[in-house]
Image (cartoon, rainbow, N blue to C red; front, side):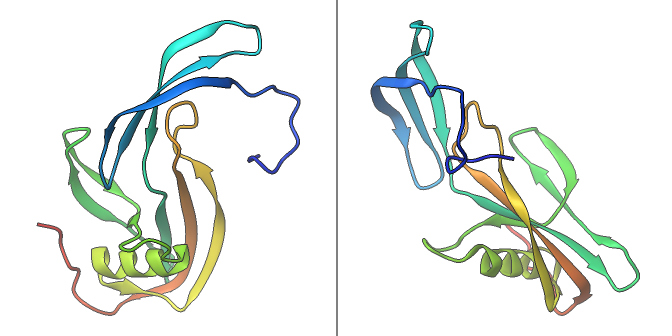
Length: 148
């Protein structure tokens, strides 16, 4: 995995212009005009800006994985997935966010947490990353707070 701090031999694209087609708290759609290293111009090249999010791989003392089942309107399906979400307030540390999300979505908590790393969700089009954490010895602490 590499990020902007890693030396690279691949030349970045040159941004010739940039404008927002839409922007709110959860999503921004940016339309860029970019020039590739070979001189070819792409206009428009759409980029979606979204907040980073977190995901918890929570294991119980007997090795079971804690999952959530939720309806996801984007895909139009009910899916089973790792608990996770975005920060409730700007600057909320990712560890704090993932602990809160695990408790809210599942009612589970854990004392032992390990950061597994982060990655871009879809690097060609999206700016956000998912930060993954391992929670060991997860146990039910409360009832889940289900979204409306």
